[in-house]
Image (cartoon, rainbow, N blue to C red; front, side, top):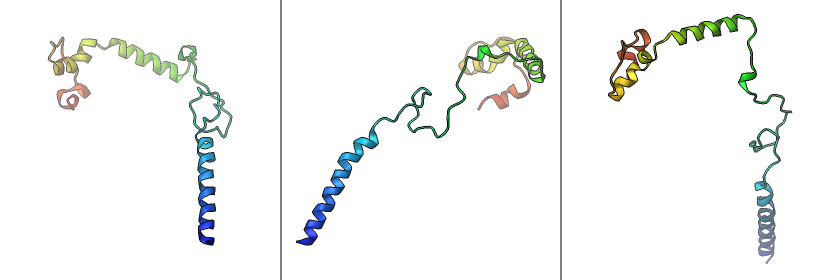
Length: 110
């Protein structure tokens, strides 16, 4: 009889823990202010937030120089030649010559 009483008490405590604990554990956590998508509270204060890249301006520096060199090079590329392998693969007519180097036939068909 004692074993049954002990087991009944144990089951009652277990079920009470489940009934009370599960809804509490499943309750939505407080938002950390960062889009409210984190599921746990942050351990440190959020100090960085996303911003519009249009607000960024490079000052005279090696980074600005590299950006301008890259921009000039990319604007000089012929779009038809860059799209040549994709037109070929899609069965569309190709225009101009295919670029060489890394864009050769052996490397671009993967």
